[in-house]
Image (cartoon, rainbow, N blue to C red; front, side, top):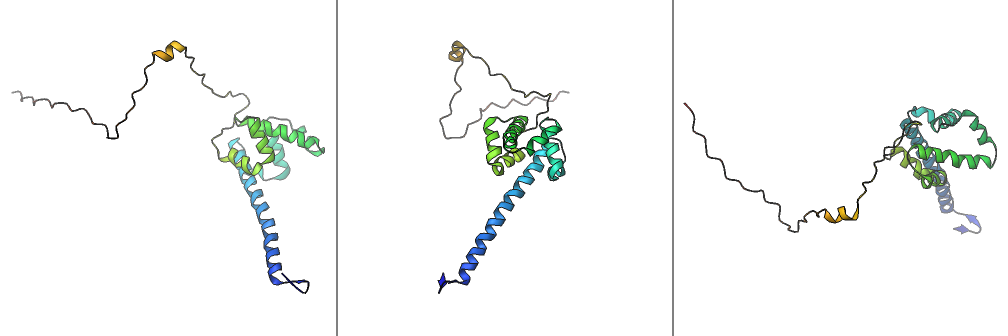
Length: 174
């Protein structure tokens, strides 16, 4: 809204509101990612505070994914740093039992996937540990046919307990 070419107070108010939202939302997302990283570090057996110290957290991140410290230099090389960031995110997602799809999410949508990693049911897998996966039972077609199906209750009435006759009282012995 302008009067004679000059912006009015409403225009300034709307502009400042948009500018305020343009600052508040990214800061809120940044805080969400930092808090989620603190929780991820805690799941990996590290202190939460190690995620908020800028350079130190990178060294601890490399330790969590079992990479040597010299890999920090790869983050200083343009374009190479993006490639190795994807590789390191892949290592992190595998350390928590996730696959390549989760790696893509961690790289492109960290504000969604780091909280999933932090507050989800995933567990940090140490280097020597194996994931316990129970093998699926192998069933032959004959066994599948022989197994009777469980009866299906079709009545809406609650199940009635079987009634038994009470035992007669035992006379006292003298």
